[in-house]
Length: 167
Image (cartoon, rainbow, N blue to C red; front, side):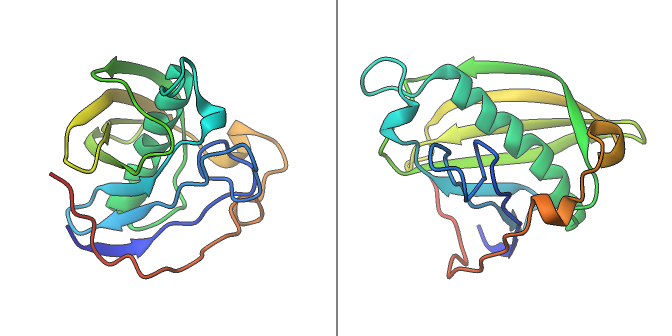
C-alpha cells in the first residue's frame, strides 16, 4: 500500500516520542486508503515474559494508532480526542526485537465521537493483536492546560518509506 505522507512524532510519548530512550520511537504514515500504518519494533526493555512484549505496551500501540487514524483520514493533525474504551484481543505472542507492522483505520465518526480499528501484524500479515478503540473528540486545551501541540509534537523527519507491504 502506498504512503501519502508522514505524521509528526512527539518528544516523550512512550509510543512515538523520539526523545524517550525507553519508548518505541515509532514512525507513522498516512496511507492511500485513509488508514495509518507504522513499521516498528519493540525493544527488549518492553518485555513481559522472555521473548514477549508486555500487554500494556501492545494496547498502548493500538491506542496510538487509533487516534492517528483520524489524522490519516483527515490528512491533518489538528483534531484530538481522549480514549473512552479500548477492547484488545491478544491473538498471538508479540515478539520484541522483530520488525512489526501496525495499522489503524476509522470505522465510524460523528461530531463528538470516533471509533477505530487497529492491529499489530508480523511482516507476513498475521494479526498478533487487534482492538476497537472509542474516543471522545476534545480540544487540546480541554485535555491538558498550557499545551501547544506543535511544541509537544515537533518532529517531522521525512524518510524514504513510499510503500508498506504486508501479507
